[in-house]
Structure formats: structure tokens, C-alpha cells
Length: 308
Image 1 (cartoon, helix red, strand yellow):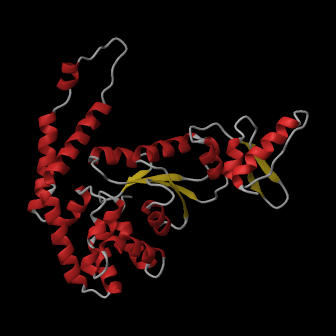
Image 2 (tube, rainbow, N blue to C red):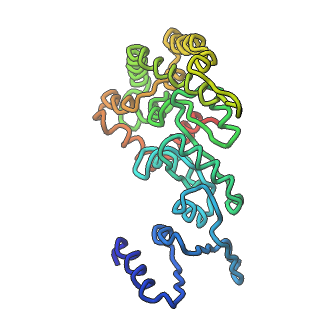
Image 3 (cartoon, rainbow, N blue to C red):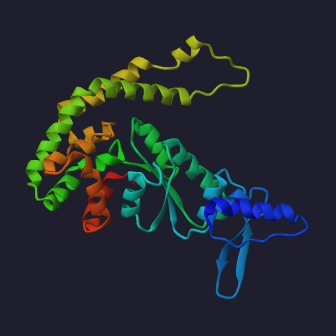
């Protein structure tokens, strides 16, 4: 039966026989989650003779996601992106022993990890999160790490395939000279970063101001004015720290630091030509190799760029 008809059929049957109790045994997460007014019972354990059953616990996690996680026996890893995104494929290959759950934006990853850890029935299985570095400060990243939310040492997940180790490994597979290819990509990325420095520092400045704003607490009898809020934000100091960091990376030709600061998702899809392939297919080819023939070699190289 087509899934779109399943819930409608059983809803019609339930409505026609209100004198009956309907019990469904299903592995269909979508079907179970549509019965919002029903009791949902899950199999917590079965030792061969005895079934251990529990009612679906209260949780801040979306109901469909909660049902999905309850049947899982692996450690849970919340990541950014969607089911069809690079994030899901990359992290599934890097952490095959984890149940990878794409959660959309960074904030949703953080919220899911927190909600998971507040749901007592899930505590037997650990949950962690990985987020892009984006424009977050070291203070923000360290605070999240204490909550089990780790970050990439590069700004965007696609930047993993621009690291020296990844470029050299992939160059050999594509039949390109590893050192020459990396040197060309490093020059290209560094020059592009320098050209976009004003835009990048502006976005980093906005992110820094937002961090200060999010940390402001207001007491019950306090009323803050616009001038009062402005006085709490040392914008000049934030701006100086941002500019100094970006300028230092450019002056030192610090490639790893540039990859950690450079927020541009199109960057990795513009370097294929250095390997002798089409720009747009580089990331897809790299991920396919990470999932296949080069899994061990690439995984070892890329895991170094994830905080722990």
C-alpha cells in the first residue's frame, strides 16, 4: 500500500469502529508519529525470553525523531544539513559506528543534543553533535564542547577536502602531481580569501556582536535602553580582534587558519580544475572515494580537523 494512504485508511477504520481498541505493531516511524493522541510503546530490550517495554517518554525532541532514536542501538551523532546533504554522507563515512542524524542549522544541532540529554530513557546511548566552525569564537566553541558539541577546525564541512592531507591523497587518485596541486590550491584559496577579507571580517564582526548580545541578562526590575545595550558592547574591541586575526592569517600565509576562517560553501566546488576534473564534481568524487576505496586513508586524515 502506498505510504500516503496508510494513515488515512487506518484513521477511517478507527473512526468507523470507536468501540474497538486498535493495536499497531510497526517499524514505520512516520506512521507511528502521526498517531499523536495514541499511547506509543517501544521495545526497550529483549533478552530472548523477556520483552522490556516502555511508554514513549516526554521529550523536547520532535516526536518523529524521538521514535526513530528509540529504536537505535548506536551512539547518536547530530550534524548540520539534511538527509541529502554533504554533511550526512561525510559524517556517516567518518563515523560508521554512529547513527548520524542531520538536523538542519547549527542551532538545531545544539538544541537536539541538549534535548536528547534531558530525555532519561535515552541515556543508555550517548549523543554528541558536530557543527561547522562558521564565525564562532573560541569561547563559544569551548563552551559547546563541554556540552558534547564539537566543531570542525575548518569553517565549512566542504573545506575538509581543501586540507593539505585530503588534496594530496586525492591528487594521487586523480593522477595529478600532489605537491604541485596543493601549492596551486593553496595559492588560489589564499588569494580568494584576501579579496573577500572585508566581507568575511564584516560577517565575523556581526557574529561577535551577536555573541555579546546573547549573553546579556536582564533582572526583573531592570529596563535596558538602546544606549544602555550599546554601552555593554565594546564594538571597537571586537572589531580589532577580528581584523587582527584575519590580517594575521593573510600575512603569515597560514593555510589552516584561512580554512578555519573562510566561510564560502562554493570554495570547494571551484578547485576541480587543479586535479584535471570538472570543478563541480570534485566534492562529489571526493565523498564517493571517502565512502569507498579511500575510506581508511581519507578518514584518518580528515578526523584531525574535528575537535575532540
